[in-house]
Length: 336
Ligand SMILES: Cc1cc2nc3c(=O)[nH]c(=O)nc-3n(C[C@H](O)[C@H](O)[C@H](O)COP(=O)(O)OP(=O)(O)OC[C@H]3O[C@@H](n4cnc5c(N)ncnc54)[C@H](O)[C@@H]3O)c2cc1C
Image 1 (cartoon, helix red, strand yellow):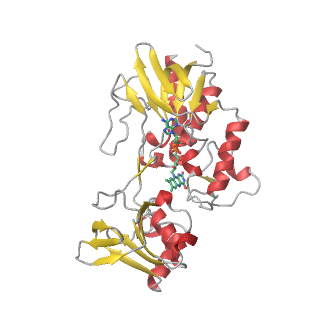
Image 2: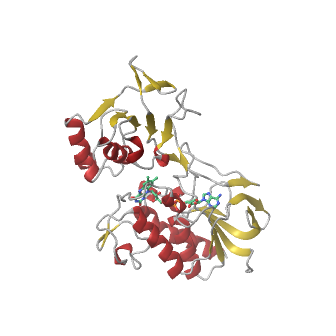
Image 3: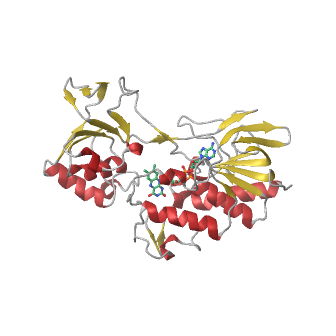
């Protein structure tokens, strides 16, 4: 079935996962449309300028490209082996243009309604209908704060997603909360201009010791160690924040200290669209429970792709989910 507002598959989300879903749908001659609430690759547009990916992109070790036959590293001027966020955004845009992906930008899906013969999508541009839906709204859509009294509405407390540049913090006292790569990168960037304290739950964990990709990696590892050893950064561990009162931070040890900014690099939660006419079963992390081909276990016809579809742990990253997206499209193809 095809007219502009009536397609076989509607894809919600135009990040890497949704763009790739559009690519495979097109290759299999399945009618589709991708809806994106912002611009293609929206999550990446909000990241810090100059940020460097932790996924390499060179021949033989390409963790970043959407497909290995259209690699990022072939683009002129790309930083290697680790591309910048700007390189990646250019690549996504080029991928969309080269492959003529049908993506409606600035068109948020407000509600996905399950109906007898498929789905109705209420969007900013009116209603669309589809037989199947692929949700690719990502597992990094909602900045997550810990539950600490005094954070909400406190102008001193921000999420790492809203941190822009160290220049604004010259001479300020900054507390960075978190033990992952984002916390490490922001701490390092601030170290030259501000008085930084890094607060972690337990020891700092480094990739070269643990071989766990979510632990502190790359240049950050050696630089952070040295900054702490030189006393340029103060590292505090296992002294949880009990509450904030304006700029005063009260720790579980009974200590209290004032900061000009408290930056929570405490991760993200998934972002699912509003769904009516059926329930999506989710696990304890809020991620949809899916079959081997990415279909919701509780709402037939609704599929997931990209970082939301956690077929295995690596699916939080592009190299983990890129081969899974095609599997989702084939499963739909078989049912058309
Ligand atoms: C700070 C940070 C650094 C990262 N670095 C790396 C890295 O180096 N390498 C790597 O592989 N991964 C990295 N990731 C993970 C990265 O986000 C994912 O690999 C990738 O972006 C996931 O793609 P996705 O399409 O699943 O989700 P997203 O990129 O989150 O895309 C989801 C899209 O859905 C859109 N959307 C949401 N709701 C709606 C709606 N209702 N209607 C329409 N559109 C909607 C959003 O605007 C967004 O564009 C990083 C993540 C973060 C937060």
